Image 1 (tube, one colour):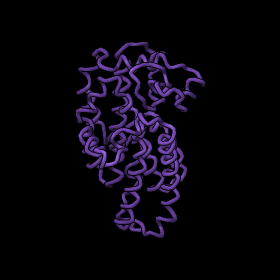
Image 2: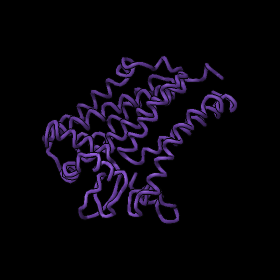
Image 3: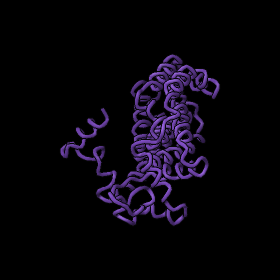
Image 4: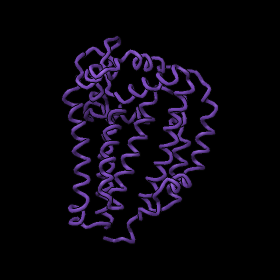
Length: 285
């Protein structure tokens, strides 16, 4: 393997290095979000909090969320209500229920939660960019750009946006753990990578794209000469295979057990012939 060309993992490791890289972006993100920390709940914040409040905090209630017994339900715990729409995000519901048990309906608590997740994602993105590029300045630049992206700044204001804030934080955590497992040859790190990947899927379903990201990175190692195909089969394929098996299993579960009107029928899993690709691109942009 071309060790000189491969980004050294240890140079970008450690919490102190991550914070040193990201602190300007963290300060900027906090400053941009500060005016909104005193804002009230708005839009569908009350709706998602009502769903979380009404969801039964029992094993039976959680089980209903995993089996989709009620086709006219709402929320991750399958609550009967109208209008009916469907998504599977039990970790978000559980987080909101726990949050309400701690600080009730105080808006500042929810804003602080989403802001904390946003700040954590800034640090993780800096780590990810530095590891992938092998350059500290790339990590600092990536963290800064992520910090000022308007949608991310708005996450401190929007309690209902916890799905995105929590999902992104867990997705980045999983990918960073995966890179540590591969770059530093620490096989044990694949276990937290897989756990965080599953938690990310339980926060937001499009976290299955973690598999696409790590697969693209693995292929780039062969294309750029960091590993020969034979080396990759011996070292990289078992790691990638374990992650892929988990994420494919989750996607299959969603596909076969979710009702036809559920999230899997939305644009990102519709064929281009159905207009799904154009709808998704329009939504994303």
